[in-house]
Image (cartoon, rainbow, N blue to C red; front, side, top):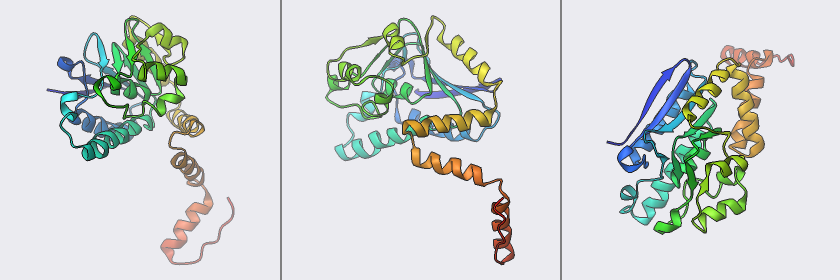
Length: 255
């Protein structure tokens, strides 16, 4: 049975892709679980950081389960599978908590796109990344040609997507795609997360929003969220709401 497991300990949430018989290939049920967990974690003030890893010694995630999408109609493939998956990966990317992809093994196709939706990545020395979609007659569909361009040079993406090359961990580190290569990636990720737990959650959240706005990740919504956060504690906002409730004209002070 394919699923995603969630544990929360010491303010750190850990999501584990659990489909080991298929190298943690993503299924519709797993995508739905990821979406639901993002909603849950977004609202959980006791969670300061989120780790995402895979339950297989050699694979973080090798992409989408081919058997799940092979028989989907072209219309549903584009509408439901690609756009639906895109929306869920965007949801992960825009999570207010810092996220770390723990690449305990290979991250191919949708698995690489999933890792790209996290804030940083820690990688095992023997793990590799790749975009092998053309080998099964499809194209990257969950931001492999879009968000990934902000994280890797265009020629490297073409090397993977057009020529079928795999990128090893040391090179991924040199390219800046991963923060660290280590034999114990989950241990390193927990060290990163322990540091996050000592920082101001609100300052971290707002800083992440500012970085994303500058990078073009959901810029419109983030600008309005930051503006709304600035106006919310003002006297004018309180006066405006009170006047509306009292059915009178507001008297703004500019404070």
